[in-house]
Image 1: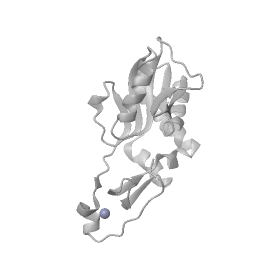
Image 2: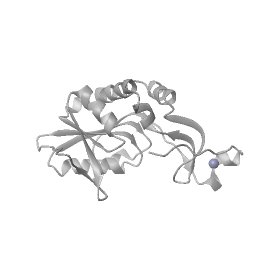
Image 3: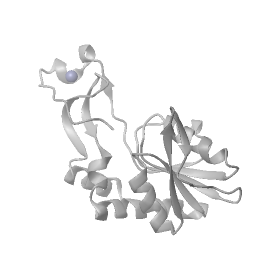
Length: 189
Ligand SMILES: [Zn+2]
């Protein structure tokens, strides 16, 4: 899939809005991204999963691990395309852990899958969950990379689209300076 094809799916489903937004952080931005809206369409989720699987098939992963909740749907689709198990890690008392009887073995080769990587913090945390089991993490994959510092992941990162979304404090927002009305989108992922 090309960048344009991926972004068309986001736009069609309202998962990428362009305008002038007040984010829940209080910062302003010209774009608003909500990947749950594209992933609610099973056919779109399947296409995105297949595209990520194509870029990561060479790693020969034996399992996909995603952080809940945002990574679950796309993780499932990548797992389906690669024909491997798709597990998720979830937060318990503040830290990500494997629950529900999910297990990784020392022999497992793990691919970390997320919907959107922003700083890479949750990706690093998910890598640590996998490594704590003794399994090997071979790579990470995300639909959209919002400008993470991939070198800090210590594993190769594949994304379908790299898109930096600038965010400004209201007092230095160029859109406010143009007098454009600001809108508050739905809850932020
Ligand atoms: Zn503004």
